[in-house]
Image: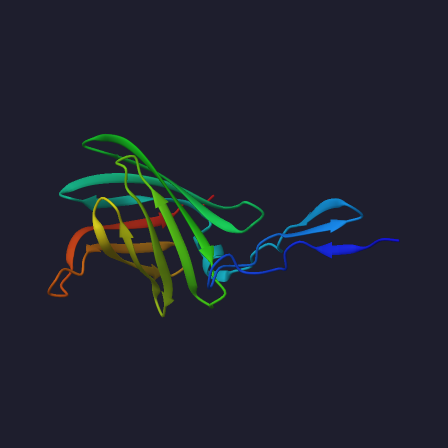
Amino acid sequence: MNQTTPVSEQHTTAEGFQETAVVSVVEGEFQVQLPPPSQNEYLDFLVGDWVGYYNMAGMHFDVKATTKWVYNHQYVQGLNQSTGPIGTVESQEMWQATQKDGVFRLFYFDPFGGAGLGEAIWAEDGFLIIGDDESTGPFRNTVTVRGNDELIFRLDLGPDAEGQYRTIGHGHYERVKA
């Protein structure tokens, strides 16, 4: 007789996050069922190789970025390499779809100790990302999508006590075509 006893039901990890693995015990043995791969047109758009630039804190950086689906097609990982006056620096971001259409969790890490969590919301012409970084504080990043192959962005710190934002960077990426 094959008896299945659920150890955990399929659930969300936190409000809005995608499904997680289901762990069951069948005849005394643990079994894991992975969640189905995420299907998301907005994240699919980000996948690929990108080149461009950004200006941050008065410095110009040339950028190469690669984004791809990872971890059972649950996240889109962005690996960024920026070269500028302080040398070459790398950063990483992870995008995760939520159960709300057009809303994503964004985790990022950089070599300056910056690490943060943001919420990216698809708007009519791109993403609005609101988040917090331990080293810089709250921020807003506006990413405008032009056609199928361009991203234009602006990074603002804030809001401050008066509700104002201060622009600290901007840039432009183009998709690398094979």
